[in-house]
Image (cartoon, rainbow, N blue to C red; front, side):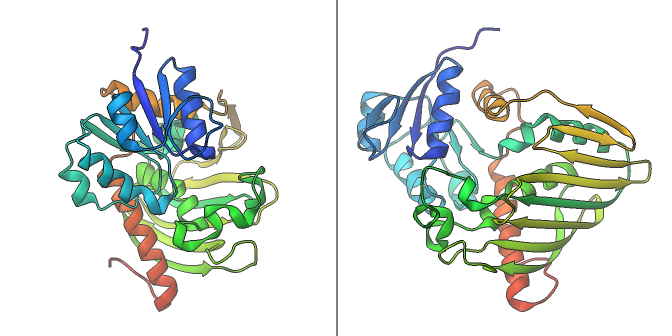
Length: 309
């Protein structure tokens, strides 16, 4: 079915904003930016007020630094924007504020839930008992945005919303998507190396989920061989999922699932714009993820098991 053309406005012209814009343009939408940059591949406005007045978008993507998400939402509300809104992860916006917002639909940019491997896992786990889960996600920070020195990246600075715990919060989103609510955590981590300015770079977490009594999660900015994998033991089988290689192994059977670099972004934007596909991360789900991140930080500070804040 042919997609209708939408005016899509991307707030933020950095690497993730440019990626959203590129995907939306490939989908046939009319795209513009709000950014201080003057070298972007689309019409660029110096302010949100100019963009809303002159471009009149029906879809807005907030792709600024994490610490600026709340201000961007406040500006959209003040300027009476009422269209569809996608906020990049982590959300870091008060859920109560968004619940009262006039936007037609709100989603949060946890695109990995659209990965075919995660979809395959969702299906496999639907009718089986999960015993243990092991998650590992690591990539050296120097490979995240190769065109910029690590010290200049927001990921390196805590006050700008950086740190591996929030950068890799995808893992907490898809675990919730697969296993339900996280019931408690014990965590160790923080800034263990010197790769960042002052943000956290590695974590080891033990958690209990509704559908799994034992999940272990390791996140880091150190791995020079990018890895994103999940190993799950159920009462019936052992499942190994590799999101980088896009493979799903059940016992001795391996399936290669077709994907490409932008597949998850295309699927997420289509779900946001279509409205009938509710697979995108909701405000409530993203707020749960933000809450879990704070629980993890609290556990590390108190050296204790944390079930709530």
